[in-house]
Length: 268
Image (cartoon, rainbow, N blue to C red; front, top):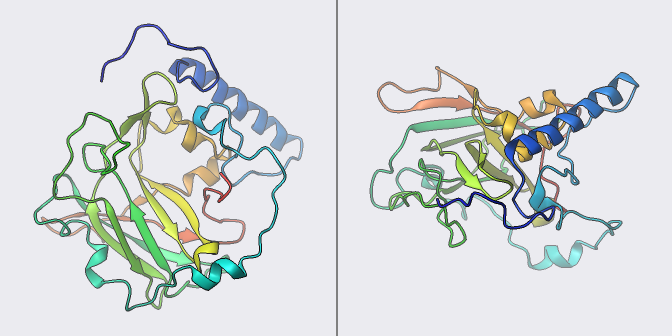
């Protein structure tokens, strides 16, 4: 990627800020949050909609009061998924396009639970991700990393009676983004969960343990509570790892309650 030595613009969303400037802003927010907790403030377990270091969110986060919309009309024509609509092989992202994709093959599994620890059965779980080089199959992704012709980066399945999901995929690579100069996203997988219809959709991201980019990433840090952030990080699980075939990670998704998995709000 060609990088200029001087910023082209100094606007708040111009992607010209340095990493050190972004770090200082994130540190100030973290310090203010810690002080608020010491003074009895409430814990924030969900991403902030207005988080200044996340520059590209400045122009699209809500600035006006929200209004409820009648969902009944939407539900009349929105798709509803069932077993007949989701193929068994759609959960294996390594066999979808005529050859073996490049990268660390892995199994990602876990349970979808409610706030009481009960399994959420027959839940449609969708994932999408970059390939092992950090490139999405999308026309807007101009990152000059190779496209893997054998990897689409999308999969889906329904949870079983125990609320369990299981995907076979390739570990995604980190990639640059234009939030600020030399900004890189930690490796992650996007998850989407539907309730009984599209109006109940929840979207979140799963990360991998020990990523050195965590402290530098404004999207990850937009969840200001450290314990809530940690709930987005999967656990390496050697019991899930398979001999000479794939590494294994486990990650549970909790939809409600005090330990709810941080989600991207629909209004974000």
